[in-house]
Image (tube, rainbow, N blue to C red; front, side, top):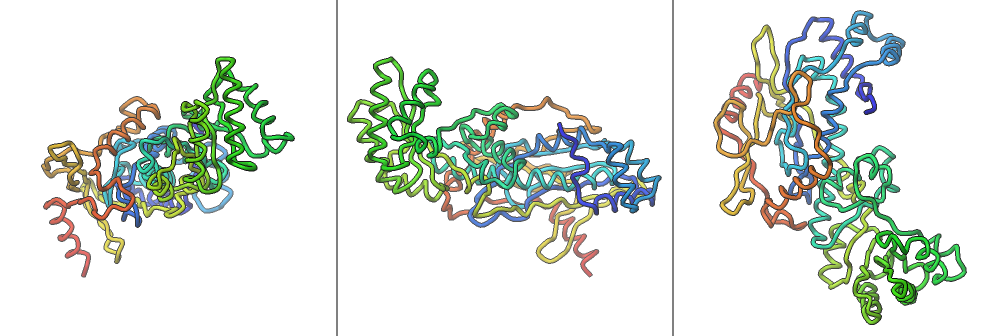
Length: 451
C-alpha cells in the first residue's frame, strides 16, 4: 500500500508538535460521524473503512518526509526525531463496512495517544466521507433499478484518478455488478464490463461492417459482445445488430446485448425489443446509458422501458446532486493526569456528544431495522451494537475482507432497511434516539461549559 502519512493538513502536525513540546502524550478518544443526512438521502452506506485500517497499520514518516518538514522551518529537531519513530498504537472501533448509517452515529471511534489520534484525522475524513458519499448514491441507484443491473461507468467523469478508483470500489459495495474501470477491476478483484465507442462505428464505411468486425473479434467471448446501435439511426442499428446475431447463430455463437446511449430510451427500447424478438433474439439484452440517475431510471421503469441493465457514470461517480458529506472527526474524551474527562463542542449548529459511545440497532419481528440508539459505552442498551473493535495496539484484529464479502454484507443490510426508506421519494425518517445516560452527561457539560 502507498504510504499516505503525509496526506494530512498542516494543523495536524502543528498541534502534534505542541502536544509533544508540552509532554502531553496521554490518550484521547475521537468520533468520526456524519452530522446530518443530505436532502434526498434516507440512509448512508459506510464505506472506506478497510482502507483506513490499512493506512493506520502502515503509518510512518520516511526520511524524505522528515527532511521536507525540516526544510519548512516550523518544527524543532526534537519533534522531527520523534516523528522518525512514529506509528499508530491505538485501538479502533468501527461499524462494519457496508453498514447503513444515519445522523450523528459514530462510524469510527479512535482511542490513542493524542498525537496519534490527531494526525490521522485528515486521512480518515478524506477516505470515509468520499466513499460513503458515493456508496450512498450508488445504493439509491441500485435499489431503484432493481431487479435490473447497474454498471459503474464513472471513471472518465470522476474528479481525478484516485476518485475514479474509490468511486468504483464504493459503487460495487453498494450493489453495482461491474465497473468499466480496468485498474479498479484488477486492484479490487471486481468484474469489469464495457462495450464500444461511437468512434469505432464511425471508423468504418458502414455500421454493419463495424459490427461484423467487432463480432469477429469477440464471438468466442459473448459477454464482451455488446453492440452500440445509436451512432446513426437507432432502429436501423437494431436491425443491423439482428443481422449480425443471426449470422453468429449459424456458427453456434451469440451476441450478448445491444446498447442505447441517446434519445428517448423508453420508446427506443420498446421498438428495439420488438425488432429483436421478431428475429427470435429474445436472449439479446438491452443495455442503456446516457447521463442516468435514480430519478431517470425510475421514470424509465414507470414508462415501461424494456431495459435489462444500466450504465451509470457522472451522476454516480460524483454524487452530482450532493457532492459532499458533512462528516467530522471530533474529540469525545481526553485524559489529564490519568483521569478520563468527557468533552463536547457547544458551537451553534455544530454541537457534538461527549464520552465514549456505542450505537445500537433494534429490529422488528420481521427482521427489518426499527430504530437506533446512541449511548455511552457503559450504558446497558438492548439491540445490536454497531461498533466493533477492529484494531488493538495498532494491529488489525481480523483478516482483511474481500470486496465481494463486503458487498454481500451491504446488500443483506440494505435489505433489512424499512421498505419505505429504500424509495427515492421516502416521506419518513429513520429514528435515532439518545440513551438516558448520554442525555444526562450532555446536559451536565452544557451546564458546566455553556455559561
